Length: 231
Image (cartoon, rainbow, N blue to C red; front, side):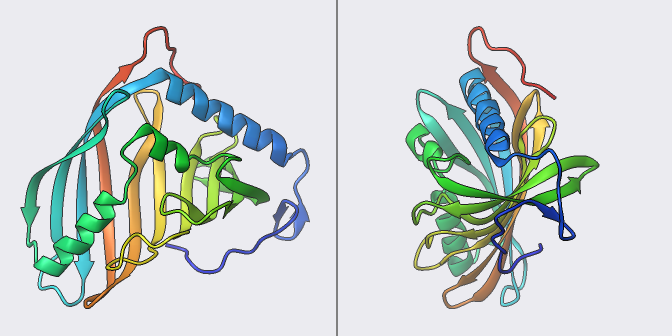
C-alpha cells in the first residue's frame, strides 16, 4: 500500500502540468448520481468475506470467514462460518474491525463518498487496471469511523469509485485505533462493490497488525423496475 501524508492541491495536476477538460464539480456530481442509481437499484445481496490477520507475534495468521447478508429491511448481518488460529487478542482486534462496519442504511449513508460527508479536491489522473481514473482528495467533514482521510480513484467512464486509500478519521476502538486502509472495488453482476481491502493497525499489546479482506458475492436482489448500471 502507498500510505503516508496526502498532499492537498487546489488544482488538478499530473507531473505538475494542468489537466485540460477536467471539472471537479462535474466529476463529483456524476459520481454521486451513479452511486444514487446503484443504491436505488440494489435491494440486497448475499456473499462471503474472508478476513486474514497477520501479526509477527502470532505463530500463524488468523483467518475468519463470514457469511454476509444485506437487505434494505434488516440492514447488513454477519454470520461467522469458520475460524482458524484464533488467539484471544487477535480475535478481539479483528472482531472490533468487523463490528466497526456500517450495518444499517443510516450508517451506510454516513460513509458515502459525497458532499455531505467530504470536501473534495482534484489532484490529477491515473491509470488503474488499464482504466483512466480521476484522483480526488478526501477531506472528511467530521470525525467518523466511517470516513477516510485520503484519496479516491474515480473511474473516468463510469464515475464509480475504484479505490480508496488513507486513514480512518476516527478511532475504531481502544484496541485498534485509526487503521490505514486501502480498498479496491470491482463490478459484480452490474454493481460496483468492494473486492479486496488491506488495513494496517497498531493493536494494543500486540503491535503492528495487518488485515486482508477478500469479498465474494453469490446473489444480488434488484429492486423492482431497476435497470443495470453503466459500464
